[in-house]
Length: 265
Image (cartoon, rainbow, N blue to C red; front, side, top):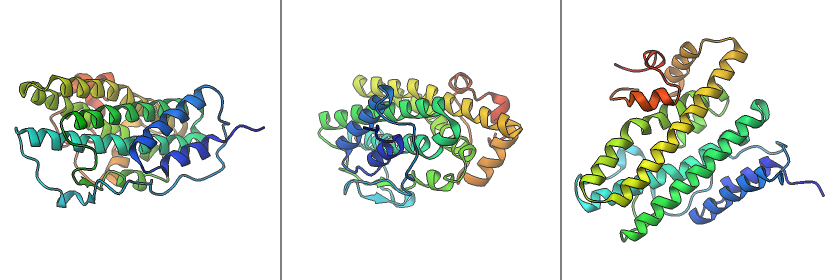
């Protein structure tokens, strides 16, 4: 009997809406791929939009309620927002592997499936913490802008790498350490440890992005800094601005010289 295709397995996870089921399915796809139980075959397209649960209610970013700063409710709201980011990140990583894996090859697939497994773990950790604090994922609205980057860059692997890992995930390297400090000052060491684990993993995720972006630039005979600036200008609906976590960015392959081309310093 022929092994199921990797593309069909990835698509099935992306079309799984219930959060716990999606986490389990994402982990299972990675396990089956590593065990050689999925064929390196891309015989179906990735969905334009992944399945989403009924809750949380998804709102435009401008319509999101303000989070209270310093209060326990504000910290729970922040954890909920981070849980949603990690939930969407599962599909972002899977989509990269399923959409661009045929052209980019096995190492690309291995890397982005490992990212999907990490994001599933991150979501599960935050969702469990929310329950410990008397809340749950879906208890509050979440913004619906996170998938825009995937739609905007669905046509080009270089654009996807330039925007998702090298801009959006890299931003987590800048802001999460400050969030860790905020939780530590509030005496919430458990949440702080979860967030520190996430930022440590994000360095590796961004490094995957910079490494594969450099490979694409080499294939296309393009300058990485110039192509990155062009793609960010064209496809990122925002501003790349300081403060930057220079040490984490350097570890992830984003030097100050690279940043100078895209950042509003």
